[in-house]
Image (cartoon, rainbow, N blue to C red; front, side, top):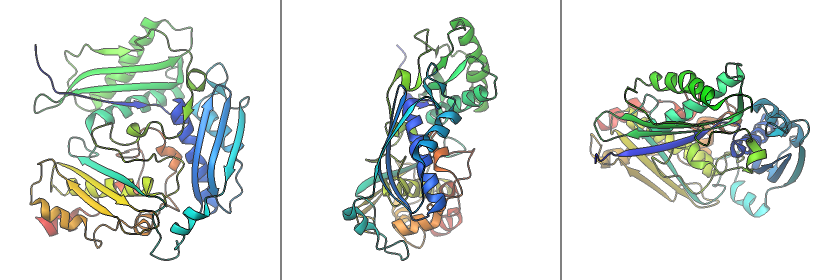
Length: 391
């Protein structure tokens, strides 16, 4: 028996019920920040059948129409009738929003007008980077994301007329040899009931899977494990098929299991919550360290105490791939002149309270390594100083 070193990551489309909830939560954050840059949000959304339930804490001067935001998101994703998964015009929307707890607020409001803003919660956050792909992300999760994202683009362009919004992908890579190889692809696509399964499988294989795999320059010769709609039928999807909930696909949001994930989800949370902003900062540091050729693989961990500005701890792991002394890299990582990991520093550096991007666009297909978005925390503007200090 041949022994293989296989690793698998999954992704889901914006029509997956959990991701639908993530997007509604982030669309509310976008709407709040657009009118009040000091807005605080911690929003949870639940979707089931013909009902959307929005709850959580929001403190903002903005006047928000939560029901309208939810309906716009559901319509944009493509859920226009109950039979498809949920109806944007027919669904019931329940809203249970209150203001942020003053006990939490006093730890954060030191305030945004000075440099001592405290972390919005305690917690641990991780950032990861690897040189195995152009965007410094693990290959399995990048391929899995691209499969569902590309299929969604084709669906919205009318090139997959039988497709519905709910999709899942899973990619297995064989790391047994120096050059990674594709081992298996799983792809489940919600569809209308009229198309035959053999026709669907053939179209998905040739119009979605093969073009995506080929775009990575990976040889698919001899790969026979393509599991396309393996149950044979996937008509009932979205919230009609499964209940959706904000923050339930956190490994999809980050590194597909190739690196640890901290204790919290991202969606629905404003940037004072370090669950989100510090995870972005940790990714930024790890990516710049790898791009500077200081190591081939890098993991950065940050931890915080609620109401405290400075991280409680900063940790570095290079998995034995370092090309300079690890102590040199760590010295750069903990130098606030290079990486400012205070909440105020992170928010200011990446303009997270007045973003140049929409948070809802991050709610599906990952928060990192996004070639389709110009994300400030993905920029490689520390490479030169890192090389100067370490090489």
